[in-house]
Structures are given as structure tokens and as C-alpha cells.
Length: 159
Image: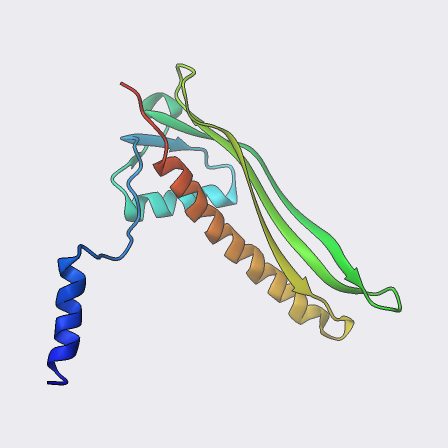
């Protein structure tokens, strides 16, 4: 009887149509992304791995063009100790972009995505905190790529 319960559970899940969420396909047959920025390489790698969208080598060959309007990393002080030393920072990572074609149609209007992470700081562990900051920015880049892909997957292509 104990062996049947997990089997019944799995059968119930498959019968209701449950499946793990997978990457959404992009509505573009081809996309051009410039090689001039670090996040672009990660974005291209994800598109190659998960989608059927082809990456064009020039904007003229692509159905859609991804244009980076701005990218910024910021570090703001969140709190100070009683002696005036920094106790916490907030790291921010901003991307502004749009997706369009060469005829002027916008598939994704100019959009800004801002990610933020809080990090504690200690003068005793400066090197460790610098390494933690690098890891947090890398994590934010990966999160940013996933958000970019979701935004582009939601784009509407008209006739």
C-alpha cells in the first residue's frame, strides 16, 4: 500500500496537466544583440540554450534588435554605526533597453529594470565583503537575464 501512494500522487499530478515551468520561447525568429556589453554575452548564451530564436550577426539580418539604452551599478549607504562607520550597503543594478525592428516598430517599449540587494559591511572583513559584493552582482546579472527574457517573451508581434 505504501508503494501505491507515491504512484497515485504522480499519476494525479500528470492527469491535471502539471509540468515544470520551462523557458518561454521568444516571439522573434531572429534577434540581434550587440557584443559591446558583458550582460549581452550571458543573454545570448541563454537564448541559444533555451529558445528557437536565431541570433543574427547584424541588425539588417534580424527580425528584432535588442538595444541597450543604459546599464549602471550603484552602491548606496543604508545605515551607519554609532561611530559613523558604514554597516550596510544597498547594491543596485539597472538596465534600460528596448526591442525594435529597423522600420521603427517597437516590440518592447523603452523599459528600465532595477534590481537591489542589501549587504552588511564590516571593516574587519573587507576582502570577504568585496568578494560577496562581486557574487551578488553576478547573481543580479543572472536574475536580470531571466527578467529580460520574460519581458521579451511577452512582446507582441503584429503581422
